[in-house]
Image (cartoon, rainbow, N blue to C red; front, side, top):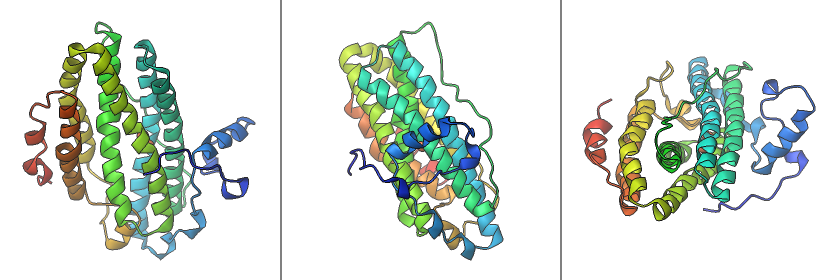
Length: 290
Ligand SMILES: [Fe+2]
Ligand SMILES: [Fe+2]
């Protein structure tokens, strides 16, 4: 996959994504400059939402609103992680990518909000939310930064890339397709940030880092599993709803389980981090429990 910075697009291909969420001040111009920097054009006018039933639109509006809230929460997650990384004297490239990830999450939240508006007709804002990452002032700064990087980036963002990739594959609506593709390409980099920092930390911090990572692993997996297990907005996932980028909770369980087995456990094991009971905790029994 090409992870290079996309070529910048002219002004004619950019429009404010969710203008009802902006300040109404001159800051808006700078905001648009930041948002445009990594954006691929979204063909907003090509939505096929009009062909859906009211129930299908409500189901999709509910899910895209949830997605907007999750992306909004991720803004604060990367802000808190950036503080941990600064405290741990993380390398400059790790710092800049972490801070940029926060900006990406603002853009994701805006796009999901606009998707919700497309289905509901309502210009809402995400519910207020602040991420709270584990914070233990007694432990070495490197261990704190590393543990939270594992939670946020290695586990959460890696799972996001697998579920986004599979969701995108079943999506037919061109707008939902473009939004999921755009978010996916950023989340790949958000995951790579964590795996790279993990490797760097092990090289420099030795066994203490490995122990801190091993201790965090079950907690990080549980944190993401909680999100997968969460109840969904009311409404049937019809085939038309699937065309607009939505899977069933049962399918997402299977994806998380295979992500643990095929990506996360091999990745941590390759770095020498003990994975404990991860494979059995999220094996076939968990995958098919819904
Ligand atoms: Fe995101
Ligand atoms: Fe992300």
